[in-house]
Length: 230
Image 1 (cartoon, one colour):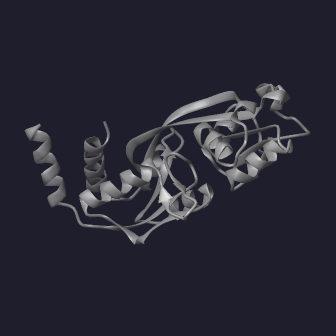
Image 2 (cartoon, rainbow, N blue to C red; image 1 turned 90 degrees about the vertical axis):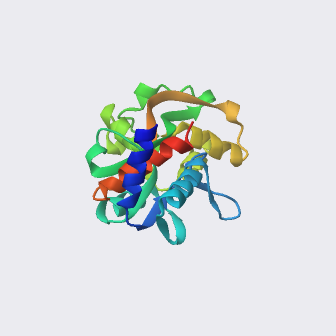
């Protein structure tokens, strides 16, 4: 314990406060915009607390809720940025500096029960497609399963994809399972009429910082996080 306290203190002494531009998407219960426009969720609370304890700040005090693809590329291309909640995958490992884990994500494919969808039969289907969010982790996993982009109906908004699923304009939708069921419930849809037809992966979620973020800061944030999570 004493060694850990000395480590943290030494890290803090070497830190300079930074001002980060922050991006997130709609992915409850981790991060989402409430009905009154506030950005909320378990990951939002953790980020605020981490920054408070380490002296970091958010540009204009504002978290940008944007389509996943936009936030992803902003943090890839620009210093002093962070994206959350991001699945830490092998493909992304070298692209970001990681702080976490901050939660666990289940990525899967859901469909209406009465459609009796066979997941494998969706591959290469000419009529009806899988709704996805552009450049999301779900798309990456489906491509690994042998699907091609032509199998997807790609859009930036999960609400729109789930609406199409309800109206039978899509066979299935691939995204965070918990976020999809939360969205369906919030929209008043009967959850018992939907099912998971494939669970693609379970991933730990992280804060993904621009890859050139000071490694001392990343280490300090990770050590601080351990005191905030059980």
